[in-house]
Image 1 (spheres, rainbow, N blue to C red):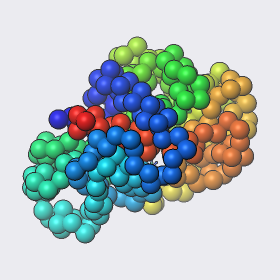
Image 2: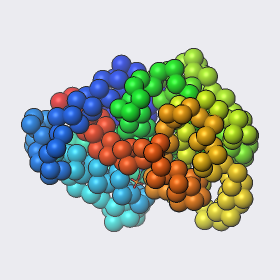
Image 3: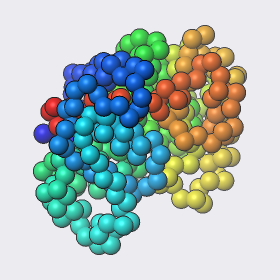
Image 4: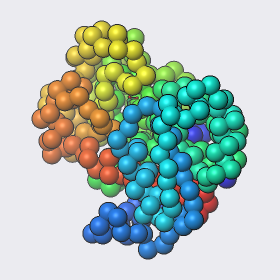
Length: 308
Ligand code: CP
Ligand code: NVA
């Protein structure tokens, strides 16, 4: 039984296996209607619980569709409507759910909640985003980059904006897949130091600079995310906007990257805040491929977790 909790906690050979399997499974579905079953049905007879303590569009729909394409069934649960949201412990919830379902996907706040769920569940647990990381997203993003430009190894990725949960998973991926990452943003929103240290310990070059145009120079991909995340207090909004205004990914920043640099964003986006609409809809943008690839990457993650 394998949990998929974080990219830095999953061996590089396993990560590579999942990316390659996702690609094969995606190719095999080419031209099929979305609801058509996959040729093989590795999740036949399996029940998957998808638990959300925060809103979601992509994670919710892509996991649901992916499980069904592979012959499994899903139930979507809102944390608030479960006893979990009314005082039942995470450990007891994990033990109970493990009697009914074959796998649990959890989107939650604290990273500790995810780890407690995994510790007490007797079925695999997948991280569907915490305040700290978003590994499924970055698996889809590695798949997306590689489909457009080949191996991520040795490339220069640039993160502009808030050093948030998605940025942390990019740093984990830098270490595990062997690429470099330059962060540009204000000092108060610097990336997670442990994630920076992890990437560096694996030999990746991690650069932190306050100058967005210098950061973007020679980039293979420029990545950003919302300036205010779901776990951030609403009161942070105005201050964040003032701090991050200079880090918008726009035409001027993209022009510093390589001519074939990609623009990436996990979505949902706030258009003309963290990125200009011109860049989001421009020829270098692969944002909707990233969304699509959540489906394919997670199908491979589900199979790896269940060993099927
Ligand atoms: N990118 C992502 O996880 O989107 P959702 O919040 O819509 O699931
Ligand atoms: N950083 C964002 C990502 C959403 C998919 C958040 O946590 O709200």
